[in-house]
Image 1 (cartoon, rainbow, N blue to C red):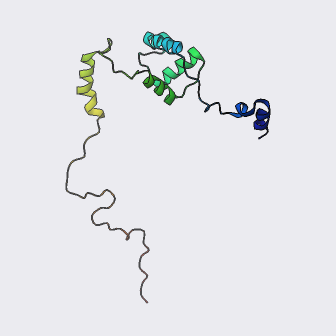
Image 2 (cartoon, rainbow, N blue to C red):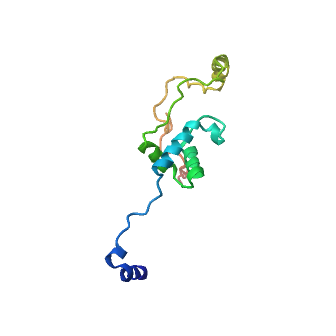
Image 3 (cartoon, one colour):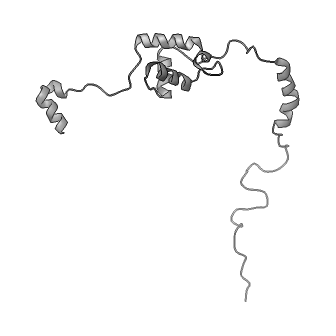
Length: 146
């Protein structure tokens, strides 16, 4: 209240006028252009071991380059605002070994894949079983009659 009163005395109605909602600083046009150039250089040029840009990595790059802190969600909004999107690789990796992949599919995958349960007569409910009715479990035995 006191701060408002000082602003009123010092500047009148203009002194207490709203200056807009507080928000995070946005990247300028030149900063966005620089960010685009840096993203085109790829993650390897910025110290990451592979060629994938993630939102967390783009967020870190913005922080390193411009000393501006974005959230992951804010980074996503920035990318959408500039019509950037996540991309699938257009071609396979050079290092890919198709023979090794096929061998793995034939030999390793059948061993690690969970076996399917055999289809058999039973019940559809996973909570109750035939011959086991609700309410009879955990009951005390009947008292002997005297």
